Image (cartoon, rainbow over all chains, first blue to last red; front, top):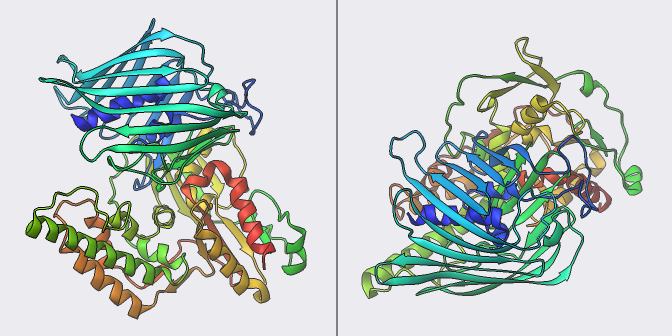
Length: 268
Length: 291
């Protein structure tokens, strides 16, 4: 359940902006493909734009990940829609009005499976994400848990052009227990094909509870690339947004790494 | 230095011209090896995490001292693991982040250079396969293939999605820079390239000055012994175990699946650099200019 919650929240972040950086650092790096630059947008001063889809990340991408002998994961990006299909999990996200619904199946093909759901409700606000075809701006409330069951996790997220903040709490019998919080403030703007993401941001991530702590990290969105601070935590002893690199070639290839070592590339 | 087909542009640095001979290599454009790309209905065959021969190939494409570094890291990781286990057993100390252990993950750092290993696994991955797609490497085109392209074709964006995805499967060799380097500059260029490949933010995964070779057997013996020692401290289902199994059985001989002429050098990019191949070629050029 914990693994699913992390995954769902991470992928939710891919659509919700505040976790964009953290989703690039998701365990398999796959969600990193959901962020790139928009060579065709007004915010896209950098990069080569070729092909009919060069102005948007929309399309179907095949992922190559460290440790995989072949490409086993596909990511399909549409306007406010995401579909990830892997050999060991599937994830879909669809939008209806101001509600985003995520379904994460950790045992595809198995009757009853291991299915988690997350519902995110948006109060809209201004935010331009460049070629990332997702409406991210405003404030969000989220509930996540097993399909057909009660919510085990609640989160909030606010996304503006200058600040992105969020928090999540586990829902326990004795009341909510904080899991993590983060603040992300833009310290200087920069031209980026990711629109309002462009610039340098300072993220401060706090893991709650024993063994937790607060971990700062600088995030740079410029041109067609994302670079975050050195490092790469796989547990509660560091920032989950550290160690991320990401580059879009302006055409049909993205590549980079999460945790500082988990390389990936994707081809449309 | 002349970059043969497989590089996206001719050498940009004027200094290279004076240092390294230029030679036309149009022959390679007409001959193999080739990638035969086919659409497949069958699901790809699952493979292990560590393809046979990939560790030896990775070590063969890294600076020679990497074998020693790897053994020392493995020893540190084993010691840290023993210290943590002893603390729990003898003193009841909880398994919280341990200042005595190399941060952030001793076992992770004890693995072979990951970009190199990732690239080596792909180099030896033929035939490459993915859902709906299979790519063979051979000296000639497979008559049944849907597409056939030279392996070392100039790297350029293609509108043909099948070719694009086929080349992406064979990404390590398909994006490699094949250089022709005269003997006088060869050793210095190899040193310079291998210096570049150790940079964390670099784009170079592997450097080969020959199509095959052998690692130092005495150093390998020490590495294998350390790997076996480390295995004793891991749970049976530990994710590191396949790597340690492979390290414990690593052979000294390595071989590329493609031929290299005596004056050629093959430089393989990192997976993470595929969207910035211009940086990769610039780094290769820079290694030439720094001679």
